[in-house]
Structure formats: structure tokens, C-alpha cells
Length: 94
Image (cartoon, rainbow, N blue to C red; front, top):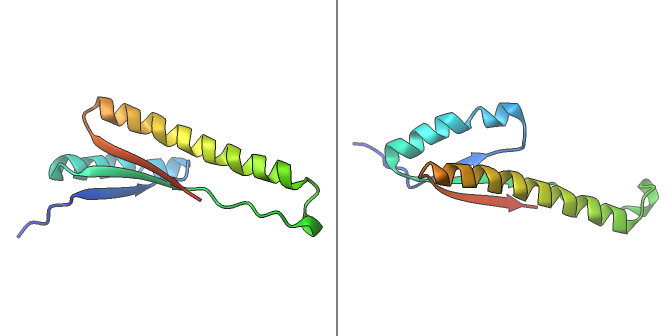
């Protein structure tokens, strides 16, 4: 009995090591004609007045920049994979 995968989750954190999983995931995606979910977590930045020298606005801007960079990276990768006929969904979570 063979298991057919419908979705394959690939956690990517921007590192070279994490990116090495992608070719293996793509092989499974092709084999099962599955959707690939590109997933990245951006750690939430907390503002603690006693421990930071920058203000809350700067902390919020840093958080927003991290989210935008992660989204841009996954979207670029997803667009490339879509050109290669893969069904791809990029997901960024905080």
C-alpha cells in the first residue's frame, strides 16, 4: 500500500542548512503530485522598556522589516517554483 501525500511542509529559516531540504521535498512533491508549503516563522519582538535602549517604534519597525523580508524571500522562491509548474503556497507566521 502506498501513501500519497497531498501537501508537503518545508520549514525554511533562511539558512543554508534549511535550504538543503528543498530538493528532497521537491522530489516528494513530484512523486506524489502534491502541494508544497514553504513555511517560515518570524519570532515576535517584544518591547521591554527596562531592557532595551531603542523605543517601541523602532522595535515595531524591526519586527515589520523581518516579516517583510521573510515574505519577500518565500514569495520569490514560490514564484520560481510556480514557473517550474509546482503548486506552492508560501506562509509566514509570527
